[in-house]
Length: 227
Image (cartoon, rainbow, N blue to C red; front, top):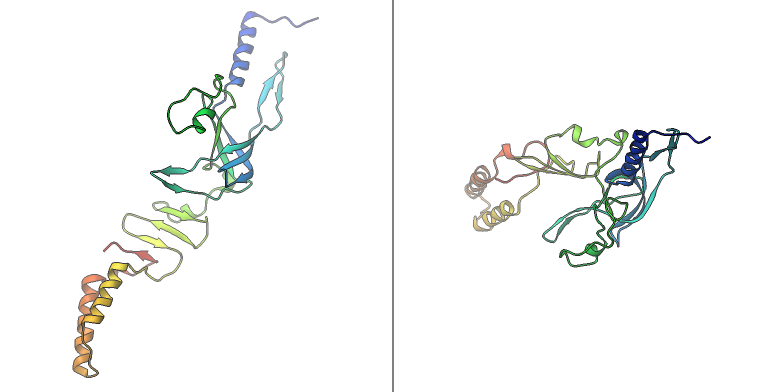
């Protein structure tokens, strides 16, 4: 004997099915990378759930997407490229309307590739999300700085309001304007192998150093100073 449902149950089930058909964004895991096309293959990282006519929850199998455009920071001809690898987490964002025609065009407004709305068509993968056990280590020691480089590695660029640190060396990074100024001083200052000549030379060198690059500006980690 069929199970009879009330009108409210029918409408509730319809609403659930409608929500299942609406796609916005979902975490996913990279399964393949195509740098020449700037796309990735991914598998959705959270399983979908549907309900049968008795209200029993049924988990759907993992869903995969192929050749998904990989998002990256870009503008004015500049780009920040991240070497995404298999196993990385991404946020899979679905376009409200098909973006196929726009992608194959020149940036001008175009009709959608097809007229479906809120579907799994035209996803984009944003490489900025990962599960909690893969939390970054580097920001813990320098949370107030911009950090560029391999997480936990020594070959990093760290930017604060006052300096730029390059790598893990304790040596200061030389600015070309400072070095040019020093070389010009060495060329212009005559040196004679006498105590008087040596004193004149080091006096000029010390005056330049105090005026251009005081000791306090080179202490600490490797920094590129603005003054």
